[in-house]
Amino acid sequence: MSEFRKLTLLTLAMLASFLVGMFGVAHADPLKVGFVYVGPIGDHGWSYEHNQGRLSVEKEFGDKVKTTYVESVPEGADAQRVINQLAAKGHDLIFTTSFGYMNPTIQVAKKHPKVHFEHATGYKRSKNVATYSGRFYEGRHVAGLIAGKMTKTNIIGYVASFPIPEVIRGINAVAIAARSVNPDVKVKVVWVSSWFDPGKESTAANTLIDQGADIIMQHTDSPAPVQTAQKRGVWALGQASNMSSFGPKAHLTAIIDNWSPYYIARTKAVMDGTWKSGDTWGGFKSGMVEMAPYNSAIPADVVNLAETARKGIISGSVHAFTGPIKDQSGKIVIADGKVADDGMLAGMNFYVEGVEGKIPQ
Image (cartoon, rainbow, N blue to C red; front, side):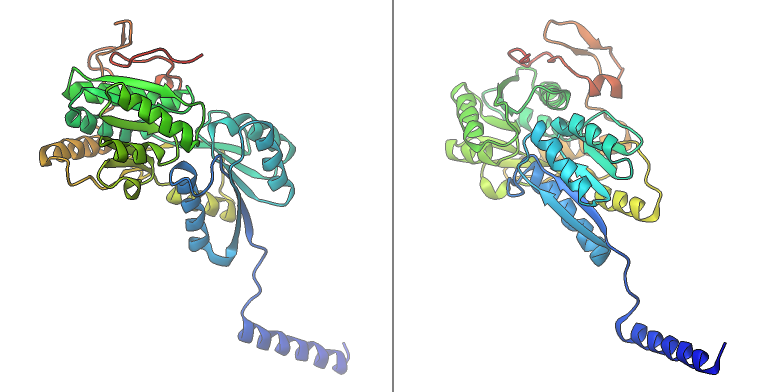
């Protein structure tokens, strides 16, 4: 090598060292993480909390990640189109956050085997598709205890979205818990066939109040039922996030879905090459499910009842579905002293004793 060439290489090396010192080492391309939401991020419920998880990923990893989201995506063909677009645009990890996105996610994943997919609340997996959900029924058990103690009419009204196991499981958990402290409780359900429709949710809440409900619960995503309860002077329990600002007098507490730890962990797994398909079903113990602050109007003994149950679920001494449990016909579906296994919970398609009406087909 000529002296001139050696001098040139030395000069370039010195220049590179100077630039690194001045500007730092150049970063690799950021990991692209996409999120698909069934509702608007301003729903103050389900999609809002998923988006809080996305923001936590940004905060945790900074410029090592680039996140994007698409909101208010209908379940079905539109979902498949949106998911496919995210995969085609180079997203390394895609979270699809509604039950009806399950089949579209599976179909898109087949076309993009190098992309990592995470589907919320579903049960279909593949090599590059994982599933995750929260044990929301644990929170509904605590909420049911409170509702059973706070009702005066012994009628709990429930605004429900779609008759899938997740929603049915929640209705049953409320009924079982409420009737364990108040055997006279009945649960009335109005189905609105939507995750997010404030108008329908408000109408359903009004219908239930007109039928005698003085506690309004929901498995829908807008704060409309809480707002309606506030206007009508009855109690309410929020869904997915703390909805107390929408009805501070009515709002007893809420089940909070805390997705942040999971989203951070799964993003890191893709970054360090340890991501694997699997199923995660977290509850109080993992922190994926939390309870919002209790309304000061709840008597101390009821708060103690609720907290004892919550802590018991964490320790394993309490389970929301502990027998004997009967279905509507009076048939024993969970024997005395037994608890429902995850298979029964995941496929629940019956009402328990105390729930009125029939499950829509």
